[in-house]
Length: 230
Image 1: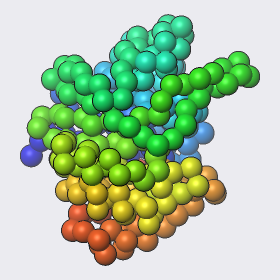
Image 2: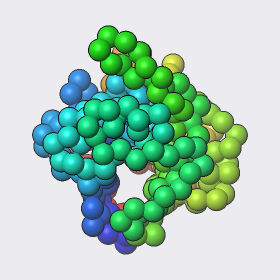
Image 3: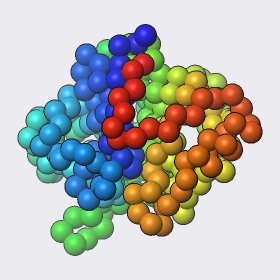
Image 4: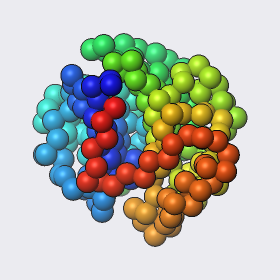
């Protein structure tokens, strides 16, 4: 309907294929769910929710090779520019339009730092994104706990698809993620950020059952073999 394909590469890494290709949180090396390597992808844009290694991932290598634009929070953009990456900074609540795609940076309740030469650098705020492409609204929540303003995100941007973490410990668990779905009320929700490491081991079917008890949002449990047409 929208001419979009959505692919999950494991953890929080998603690829959106439209008239251009978007990668979100491109974590390939070290990601047991990923079927590809950084040299296998050709994005036009990369969006990164925060600086932790399992989200910033292979951004620098991919961006240096392809020359793609990287959209991130301001402090992380400054760091990436120092690494010869074409980065564009935003901040929470900011909006931009690029190649017909609307990008809104949303809040996320999480921390952020950058690993660099054995040191930890300040990574700015952790964030999520609302992407509007070909009339389709996609919400990637990033790493986050449950927060009340998710209702506002749902009311204002009316996501057709929401990508929500369910791993627990560092983000929402299946119970809180289901509560988030009830606030956002997207058409479809896809769980992410689980089973990559032992400490975030979860059964996504538990999440599905929790959602079914709260609202009528469709839960789609993707594998990294799937290509979702939207």
